[in-house]
Length: 348
Image (spheres, rainbow, N blue to C red):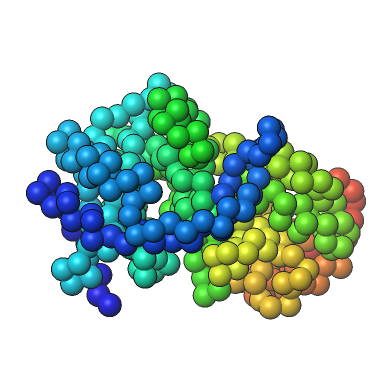
């Protein structure tokens, strides 16, 4: 299979009917029975090959995108259209200039091959040339759709467009900041991306590990609601230049198994990481840090970063050493607010 990408012409708008939208939707992220917070709800629904809002509606919307100077890029397998992404030319927003990412569909049988990501970032470059700051996305609430946008670094929209929200209140109003480090960061087995509220339960469970309680008790979250609050704080920090930058580690782009982070200190920046006990001794922490460091250091213009661990945390020390950190101090120092035996490593 050889996929080619190109800008589509207005005369080709009806070609989107070549897309096969067949998909089984197991869960959706919605409020249930008047609950305050959204949760995963099983619907077990089969979407047929047509577009979810009707073929004629999608054709009309895409035709309007063309007529108003929008951008449409397609992915082709030989001559067959197997995916497309459209963005609207008119910008909106008060604090930011948003471009609406209006449609993004990948044909059944072609998903999970990186086609959607390629189309997304081709559209990013065009929107940036229009002087837009961010994408605005009305994402479907299905688990696969939301996972795709979260993996790219999308987050809840800071300015909700009420008109778009009212078109379908089940949609998730997301944004993608064009200054975001390009995500996901991928290694052989792992995917590193931004945290999102859907990870609250897994964050809570991972934090209860025995080693977390022993070495970093301030990273233990006793309830899902406590973890949800921490994730909200983490997300707000993404837009700050000097603030902890904490990213989720996913196994095979599916299972949330831990995190990697950099944290500002008086001396500079410090790296941190944690992999759940059920996934330790498999090299995931080393793999995550090795993939994460070059990208995050480049994005934040960091030339030197520290790794500080309790001297008894042999596993953590091995991760740092395997990632090329050099031990520069071993002795009594402040750790978790107490004077303890520590090891301080540096990486440049």
